[in-house]
Amino acid sequence: MTAYDANAELAGSPTAGSEPSDSLPVTGRGSEHVDPRSASHSAEHILNAVMQRDFGTGRSVEVHFGEKKTKVDYCVPRPLREAEVREIEAAVNAEIAKDHPVTSFVVSRAEAERRYDMGKVPAAADPIRIVQIGDLDVIPCVGKHVERTSEIGRFEIRSTEMRGDDRIRIRFRLRDRPKGTS
Image 1: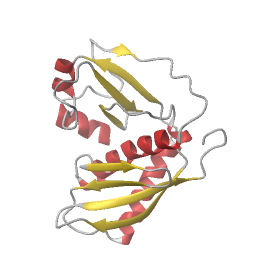
Image 2: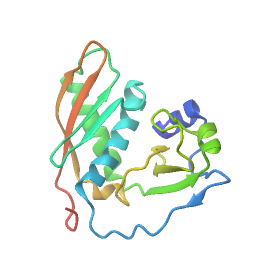
Image 3: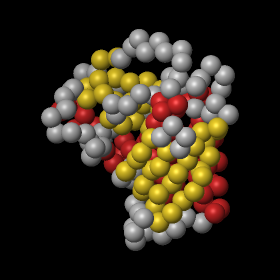
């Protein structure tokens, strides 16, 4: 079962490859220059999917995107072992290497509430933009993203630390981004 399937099961999302009936495609991004934060944001989606699939964490509870590093918090009641950190890093890089398309579409709030985890969506938001990364992740999101995961570069965990008794912070950066990206 992929993280996408787990999301679908938990949130009532459509199965891979299907699109809600009242969705409208979002087109015309046309950006030839990928902003580093767009790459970090897309990497965060992949990290979320890996953390859900491999650790059962749910999505991140807090995130900060920076120019040089990003920090993401998850509900994990113990420190990660070094071997787990390397496994997470390898899993995220494996998904990046698959060159997943990153697409988006818009659905009504009612449709989104039936199909997706709406935990971070403001109550007044309607319609809802959904971002999908291949068959790995599908979630409401307003952020900017790359067009394909191969634009992200190499994902590298810089550090992990406990934040209280039940939260782990993962700091990561992206390296070796493809030419033509910033």
